[in-house]
Image 1 (cartoon, rainbow, N blue to C red):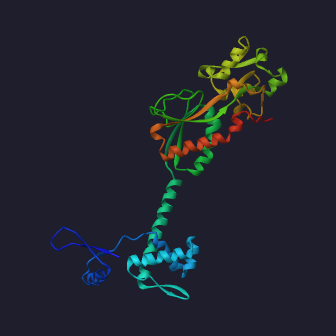
Image 2 (image 1 turned 90 degrees about the vertical axis):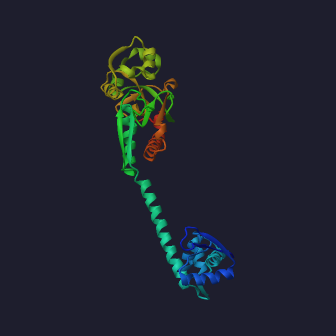
Image 3 (image 1 turned 135 degrees about the horizontal axis):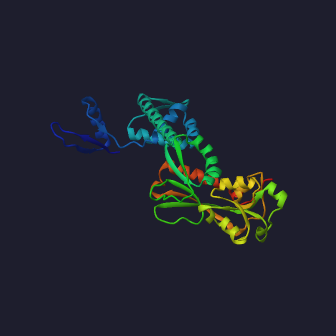
Length: 344
């Protein structure tokens, strides 16, 4: 085996690399130790230190092999390779096992320090992953915030207490690409525009609902055609342009509209009070024990749901982990969003 030495002559900044055969190298190493000249051997394979440490701890090649999950031959081969690379014996072999030499003890101590540093680094990186921090600004409607975001945040913040979510509850579609928010949860058609990344969620179904008290007194509209014979609770402002209210208005243009609201949250309260019938997302209406679903969800009222993230923030760990957690929670509600669960 050839050995390389780095030599720095006195009063110079130059470094010379000299190559010698093994016999010559042995003599030079002895001389170098006497004069404190640094001899450099071929780079060590740091993975070999695991084998040295395992044998030192187990006392046998078989015990080390079991600890490392390899065969005994591999352990013997790797130890022999380390000893050849270092030009020194690390273990005294006997029938009872392996015993560290003075050089072996030095190598084993170094291996323990390396192991401790690696374990500490792994622990630190794992802790940083668990303790993400930062602020995520989320915009969505008040209804989606109450019904989907709030329940998700309970478990999310237990897992990531360092991430703070700031909610902007607004029915307006704020411009995510321009920095109005970091993440958005929106119902409706596929978002358009540059600077955003979107993920499609399960489809949200809608149907017609009324209060149990209203149903007891007036019955329920079992079809779209029957809506004209019932009192209707209408919507105002941006909410009036949702597919559900438009569908009811087209089906019963002459219906008795007793009340209008610009809030789905208030609409639920109005229906519970027995003022009439109206359309609601099934995951909202089915979850209200005082409401009755009047008919199967009309397919034409199916609504898409999207999670939108600013493109320049998609790789930020705290933003990514929140968006993923929200998506996972919403997907877990696929049956309710699809109107498959009717309570009461």
